[in-house]
Length: 51
Image 1 (cartoon, rainbow, N blue to C red):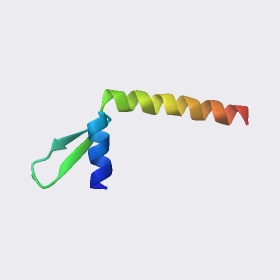
Image 2: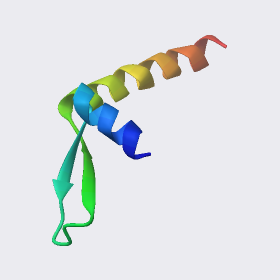
Image 3: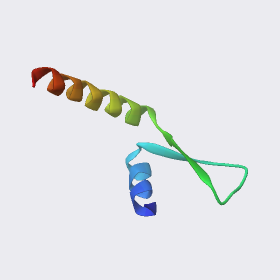
Image 4: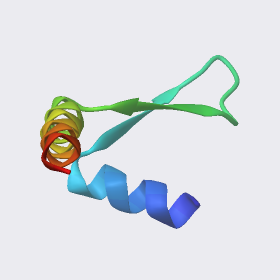
């Protein structure tokens, strides 16, 4: 899982934010990730409508 998160961070899809406990980090989506999610949602909606 660490490797996947590292890859997503390198691609610019997520940001890792530190919490009060330095052993834990919060995973936050970036604007690019939210835009991609919206694009995929639209594609799925269209696919459902056509079937």
